[in-house]
Image 1 (spheres, rainbow over the protein chains, first blue to last red):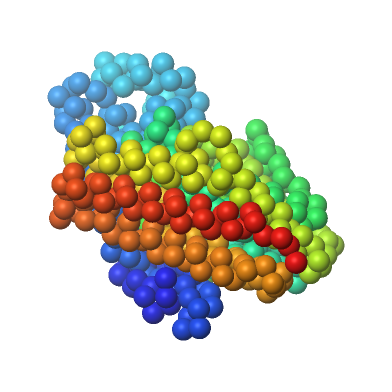
Image 2: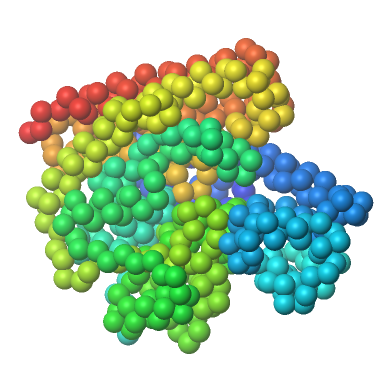
Length: 135
Length: 337
């Protein structure tokens, strides 16, 4: 890639920092060049997030239908699978699977709810009410 | 104690950290491309059995940790590396090194990194940064992919050092021991050894998931994605591949440009070995990876998507495999001058 062809399509990262990449100057020598983003990878990231948003919406509907507990919603929101959540909370996977059922979730002690809230970086009342504050 | 440390931005986190940590010992000679090449960083692997964010695991670089390890070992720099089961011990150990004036490399998870924008925060646990000082409860952070330095509270740092999931860092830290000196002769030998290791990784790893045969195999698979996965899932897979190839930390073109830059710098240390000429082949490979990314983008944007378009996509990878095979064979045939 030539230095003057380094793409400068502003990405959400580009607003915070430019990315360094290696490109050739007019004599063919490699130099470091800064890029503020590239349309191709902005779209790739959009595709990934589009899929995540769909999963979050589906999880929300399941919780509203009482088919799953609020855990499912926040797992999708925080992109966590059961093993990641088990890592953060210290619960066994089978415990988490049980807590994914609304009946079991509703009976959880405050200490257990706090563990989940900390893993998701939210407050217990937000966990219960399925409320998100953008961060 | 204030550490003797200068933040320099890099393209890739681990080679950037390596280059910055070794900059005192090497008097600034170990640039990021040199660290990447000596660390034999270039790779390709497609592991269909492992899923990341519901997509395939595709890597364009070696496993996390290898670049620093190999670079330091080849350059004869003694390193210390530690993992911890106790968060408190991990913090104390880091604090003690900072008090001695030693900048420390840390493996961290990206998800709860406060200075990353949300769109870039995934549960990716093989990111690397340098902690170079502490002021009160705040740590001063040099993250090589960022233009400037950042600060993190002790809670924020603990959270990312003990991120969970695949490749969990467990407080993993590493640093170079003080007092080591790197000579030009050491660098020359380290370059040769890094190139040899990279030749092995790309040409000789058995199986069809890694190296040149991995690229070829992936090219053939992509042609079948449309029928096998359906168009929607194929879009997700292609988007994931493009992100692994081009996203922040690659230097562009799936690390091929940074490797080309390495060979160019290596040529200055070891003239008469055609390294500059071979470097041009890797620039071409990087350009072709980007052309393939544009084709992939056409598909995941929904602008194109016929079987013909998938065939073209797969053929790009087959062409790249031929080109990179040729380039690595040329490296293999060097009679070192």
